[in-house]
Length: 247
Image (cartoon, rainbow, N blue to C red; front, side):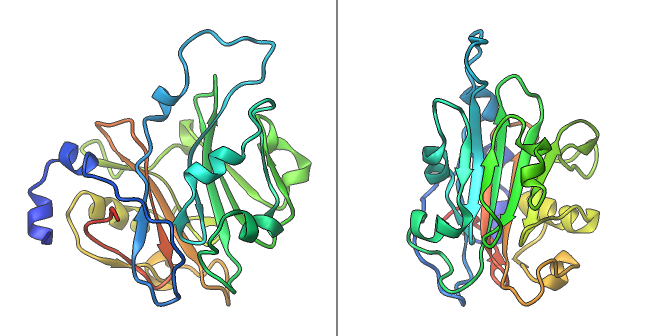
């Protein structure tokens, strides 16, 4: 598919293009990126009244690890009785196989939401951090002070370029840091809108090096404004975000 062809496709058609999942080890020179369209997060949570004697349900919207999408694997790791998620960071290289970036210190992102909460929450954590517990109150827990929990909602909501924007950038990360530079988010939105071509994901593009002397992974969670489906694209530093982004 040529970029000119892509620009002639409607937003609905872009959002519905087939997804071919990839879960394989990548070499340092691999220039590809991965994506895993997730179902609408509103639809994934039951609208039936919740039994208040039970904990609110945890919904993992997306998760990435070392430049690959691991949403299904991380969802399966959640404690269904307690509705929590324990991430033993020093064991993930053995839990999430194959290792997507062998020999490198990786970072993880988890975008999630709890039932009855309007806000999304984004966890970004490096592999060398202590164990992290995701729970309904984890973002306020002193035990998680060394990792970053970001609330996405209200004044700190997803980013749009303006009232006529076609794409909303829910969150973008580079290494273990969330990227909020408007110029960077604008370029990412333009890419998904089909208004610009390939982007080389480098320190120069992100206008920062948040993890010096590490090869970083990047993740973009986004959605088309006329759709509730949040999609996730991820890859490694020096790789390319290119058309088509589905793999």
